[in-house]
Image (tube, rainbow, N blue to C red; front, side, top):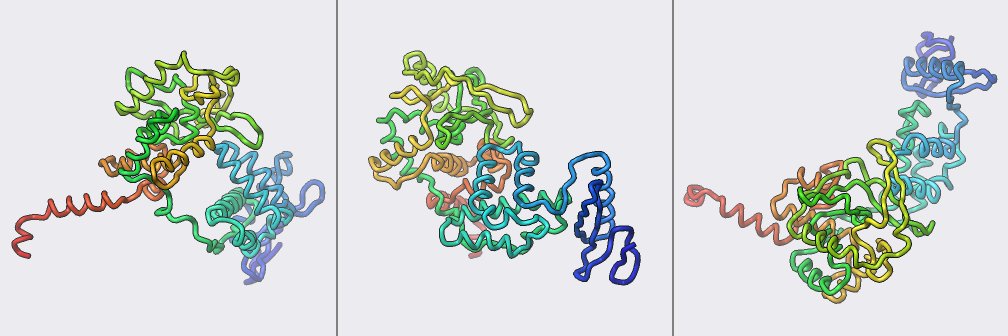
Length: 399
C-alpha cells in the first residue's frame, strides 16, 4: 500500500510524490509496468481500475511509453476524424513541419510547457503570427484531448503563450461602398461578373460557390441551400468534393432579387456553355451531419470557366481579381474579401448579428462579429446622425 505525504494509505499501486501528484502504477498481462500521475487519489484509483479492465478485455490500452507521434496519429485518425478536410489538413501540416521536429519523438507524459514553448519560439523568425497561432491551436487541442482521455494528467501547455501578433481585424480587407461600386463596374466587362456579384449578394465561401449545383436552387421558394463544397487540390492535382466547413455551414439562404436573376441567367445559358470532359466525373463525399455518402455531379455545376469548360480554381479567381482591381483603381483583394464585404454591408443595412451568423454559416456569433463585421467611416457617421436625431428636445433646452 502506498502512502500520501501525511503518512496515510492511498491504496494499492498509489503513492503521493513530493510535488503533490499521486503516482498510479499498473502491470499489464505482458508484465510491463505503466505509471501515470494525477491530482487526486480517486483519479488514480479510477485509472488503475480502467487500465486493468482494458487489459483484461483486450481493449486498446495506452501505455506511458506512448510518444507524441503515436498519440497524434491516433488522435487525427480516430478522435477528430470528422473535422472539415481543410481543418484536418491544417492540423497535419502544422504537426509535420513545426511540432513533430521538436517533440514528436518524446514520450507524451514527459512533455512540459517549456517544450511546447520551444515549438513556438522556433517559428518566431520565419513564420507569420497566424501560422504560429495555428500551431498553438493544434498543440492545445491535441493535448487537451489527451487529458480528457486520461492519457496525461496535466495539460503541458498551461501558461504557454505566443508573442508574435496575428494580423489585426482592421487589416482584413473589405470594400467600402465606393470601392464596391468601382469594382462591380469593372467586373461587368469580365466573364466572372456573375460569380463576384453573387458572392456580394449571398456571402458564400469560395469553395461553396465553386461547388454550387442546380439542385441547390429552389426556384419557387427563391432560396439557395448550401450542403457541399468543391476545391482543387494542387498538390495532388485533382478536384475534391466535401461538406461545408462546419455543421453550422449547412444552411438555406433566401435569395435577393439580384441573386435570383444572376442564377436564372446562368440556368438559361447552361446548354450553350462550353463543357470539358472533366465534367463527366461524379465525386463522392461524406455528409458530416449524417455520415451518409453523397455525390457531386460535376456536369450540374452552376459555374464553369467560359474558356476551358472546367470549374474555375480559387487561385485563378484571385489572379483575375487583381487585374480587375488594377483596372478599377482600388487596392487588390482576394475572393474571401467579398464575403467580408457582404457581412459589412449587411450590418450597415440593419441585419441583426444573430441572423447574419445564420446567413454566413458560422458556429459562433463571436466569429461573425470579430472577423467579418467591420465598422466603416460611413457607418460611424450614420450612427452619430442617428444619435443626434434621437436627442430629446427637453435635454437640449436644459443644456
